[in-house]
Amino acid sequence: MELATTFALILALFALLGSGIWIGLALLGVGWLGMEMFTTRAGGDAMAVTIWGASSSWTLTALPMFLWMGEILFRTRLSSDMFKGLAPWLEKLPGRLLHVNVIGCTIFAAVSGSSAATCATIGKITLPELKKRGYPDDISVGTLAGAGTLGLLIPPSIIMIVYGVAANVSIAKLFLAGVIPGLMLAALFMGYIIVWALFNRDKVPAAEARMSFGQKIQASRHLIPVVSLIVVVLGGIYSGIATATEAAALGVAGSLVLAAIERSLTWDKFR
Image (tube, rainbow, N blue to C red):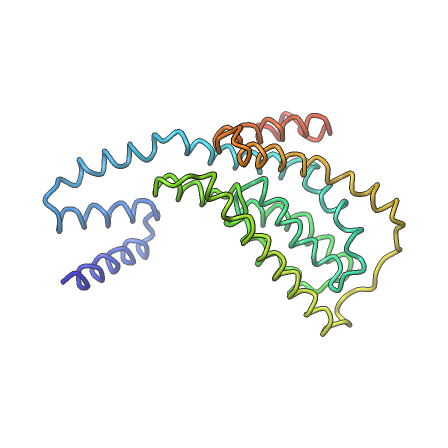
């Protein structure tokens, strides 16, 4: 009986989704249908209380804040500066600039919390540059698609915030638990690129003019703003100084300050 009920609700969900109804409304409809058919409590009353309790959580304020922070970085020069700071250090590594996709996504995931924002931002920066330098489109897009998912795992992950609120779990502990797996996954992506490059040497463009160590250090100054923002956001959470919501507010304020210092955020972009 329980198995049949489960299949019936799943079929109802697929039917609603197939009809073009919004995902949220489809899930709401299936939930209401299940309560009406298989429980004695009034569905409307239970859902009203549950929806209000979930949506009025102060912790969820971190979601739009982290999205806003990622959007600010996306629309300013801070994100493109990250490419300039990373590229010189990767010339001797097999795969060369393909690693910028992975490292860039790893860094940006730590300040945006969103896989979509990470993939869109890094892709906008790296794909034109890689194409211009002669890297194959398939591996360029593939490495971006893989590394773009790091926004789900590396804190401040928006999915972790949603899960923490829904399951009543400490978001700070979730963030701590996501750091090492996220870095391990990034290392595996880079390992795959190295192996691919060793077997496809003819598809990797030759290295550009070599830079001295001093020139590489000078180019690395472009990484300082983004790295500083990561330290402020994650350092505040892990040190216990700030909650996830407060750290998100700090991140937005920090990104606005950095954009103002670099004079790359106009009023039109801000709106």
